[in-house]
Length: 109
Image 1 (cartoon, rainbow, N blue to C red):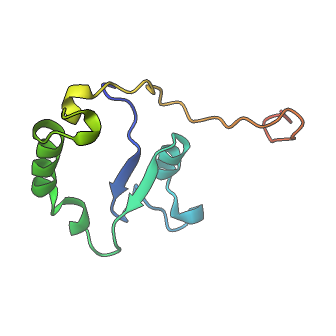
Image 2 (cartoon, rainbow, N blue to C red):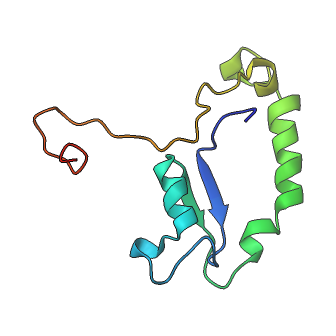
């Protein structure tokens, strides 16, 4: 993985992204993504165009934002000039840590 894990993923409301029988509408895939700390963003029901209709405009904006336009907060540099790869490389689920006196399902095993 070159840049680490993403913060969020947008998807439509079809399988494998959504399960009508799953708790909270989670499919196996979406539950796994959540366990990795990735936020799920779903398009409006019945509007698959939300996911791809603006791709070209977003690509142009992203190129200008990251590689052309200088940013005051970066001392006049572009984000591409100061970007570093993420240190978060693992696809292992995030494991919560609780105080030792708390009883959890994991401590019962």
